[in-house]
Picture 1 (tube, rainbow, N blue to C red):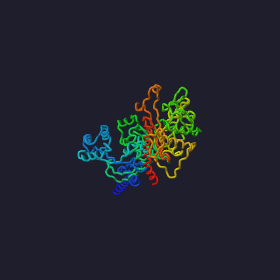
Picture 2: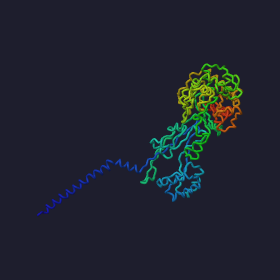
Picture 3: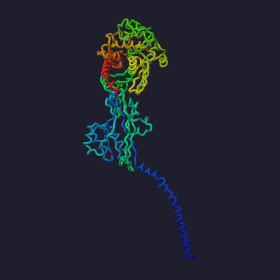
Picture 4: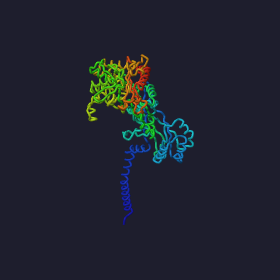
Length: 608
């Protein structure tokens, strides 16, 4: 029989075993708790904070574009937008109806808002309309008690003070496409814009700036409770261009609704003072979002407002090209006194090439051939030279190849060659092709900026400047001389161009600048856009104003000023404008007169 002592010993052993078992079972749990609460404390604290605190990017203000005087060409302005929070209104549709009585809300915008209301959380603000006017903001604020859930939000939007006058240079900004997303979270922000065209695209990285950050505390549903910290981003760098916007705007107004292009350069360093393409467009429309109707209107307009004509418009240079043919002839050993008799036509086999003057010019030498723009003279000169020498001289003066200006979309034009024609058409080069090239017609095409560049190189004595929209850095290498062109040849062509405008026999005499200190030199050009039939020549040639717009000749003019000490060069192209002397030369005269009057202010800025 067991004694009390035995029973106590047995109980003690069992209690000890049970306690030990419990301790054995509790040890892993205690170790796990220690691991989680002590060793992994920092990690789980971070996870908890990440669930509680959201880090958001703040888009930086975009850098400004400025002209040579610091005048803003592209800047940022406050963008007032109206937003709605669906949880704060009983009926989103009823609130939208009330809002539509105060500001315009189109059907597309209304459907978009209703879709976003279903897709997003009820407390997330949804933009109904942006770019509100101050009057619209005032109407909404006054009626705020009747618009539950509606508030006004303020952001930044790109603004172009000169709008269409500089649109083709500035370009525009818009949201990045899927192809443009690089993984940078800044690009995925709803309000972020990148450069899509013009210098906005060329210098986009510099203009963007650096993103800021915002820390906000949120609850389990993602609702913002409070803002914790804010660090504003670094503003994008301002970028100064060589343009004179007052001059640019004046030229755009001078051109009006014509389909035209003007390129104006400083012949000493290649600075582009004006680069105008008309008609223009408002670049802000791309930032705000184009309607289908507006896009269709722009893209189908026969005057091509979306094309940057000075760098992407490709036109035969017409008689302006005779300056290059004359240089090629002089450098090939042809005497300036070489004379041709012009009866008004030029026979070559079975084909007859006509002069613009039906009765002919009579006997002319090279000087008079340029001054009076005799086609027959340059038919004969081109026939004697051959296409190879003409093409080589063209390339020396920057024709038939991109100039390298800091703008996207530049086209190279075409200086044709024997090899090019054989490769493209499968037909060998003919002498008639060379004759046609001699007056700037046929296969040849150039851009207005290329014509301005060639003119500048003639005017500055043969220095190979290049067009640019940004000022050169300190210590930049000076331009080199063009090889294979003598001072005597350049002086001869400049003198002839001076008489084109200042001699009564010159084709642009009526468009001369009468002030001697501002006198300009130049060369007219008229380009046929359709071949004139024998029947038309046998009856009566229609004047340009009697033809449909698309059948009228292109009008061209190149020039520089002042005559004695050239500083500025210009090229003007008016699509279907008629004759160069009547349509293009007066524009060039006004441009060169205005830029010379403004020239003293350029010197002041350069020395500042």
